[in-house]
Image 1 (tube, rainbow over the protein chains, first blue to last red):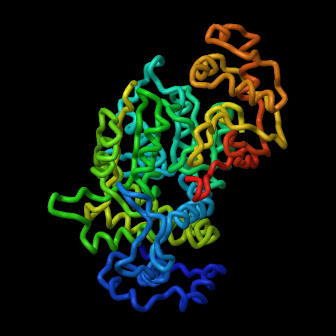
Image 2: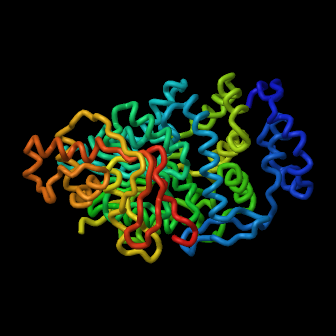
Image 3: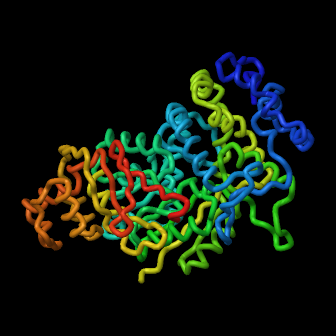
Length: 371
Length: 122
């Protein structure tokens, strides 16, 4: 964080609302556990963070499960139900996709960066393309005209960057699904403008109940959407269900570190950090890369591979933060809405999570048996 | 929503076993001109449910597709044109998709279908 953060003053209606609502949002009893977090170097930022994040209480439960039933019923005062999460995700992306696209373009995912070298904003766009290519390479998706995918599903498609890229690359048709009507509209408009209206289509749908018959897609793609799924088991089983025999499934997602054999859960301070991130990004509980691998194994999927790409995405969050603190970034952000602003404030926590080896950027792939 | 999309969509409401293909209740249908790409059409044909496409096209007012077709028909230019028209040039802007078993309607607004299920349908 730079001194720019301390020197700008917020004078929009949003700022007036901050001071008005201060009494309601500021929760006295939860302040104590925040004192130990010194990652935010500016006092202005810390005050804002208290307002938006300080409400979390110890010992709450939240929608999210890996292997069991989906969470569903959670007390309204603590955590969020699955319905609240879905609504929150849709609203967050309805509100913020425009801001993101304005600064970063059509891909709403991490870039894959070379190990050395300085990166400029243009490099980030290239890096986002490289992320797609590296994921395809890792999964061994064939370029051979006879073996390349013909029909693709993009699960959690954002504004459709991956869908359009993959459809063009393979000359295939692609269906994208998102919870956000604004994203679906925008994704379709971009596809139409790029001459892909005929074969790249988007709909509003739930990844946990995909609106497709079984076995339709040769390539099942989930690029940074898995972290939003409240029921990982259902999420993965839907990916499996819509995959055609012989299809490739690729999941690129944020996980927490694998637990050691003696551990049952993450350490309390690790959970607290993730809780804050979950709050602002409408995320359910995180799982580990190994949890995903086990789910794929339980569905008898083959050639299961996973990798930790955290080291290749390191420049991403600092770049995102930097882009917020440009004039364009700030004005867009302040015009956008609460959810987007809160999301921006929580970005340093992502960096902290990566630095502490708690957050992992994972790629997981497998193949559906041919028959 | 184009019929290529319609061909890929199904109603997966809990308890429904025959949720495909969805029936169409058109309100506003448009036709756009899309450059024909024979390679793409041949590429995608094996992945489609052809009879569902024929039925859907009829609902949108296009009845010129033969009832059945095979891979060999894709070499015939006349068929390719009609197939292309039905699949990619007809567009449902406003209307509904209806689950053939439960009757549940999924709205199509500004060309985008909303396939979200309610809590009790999952």
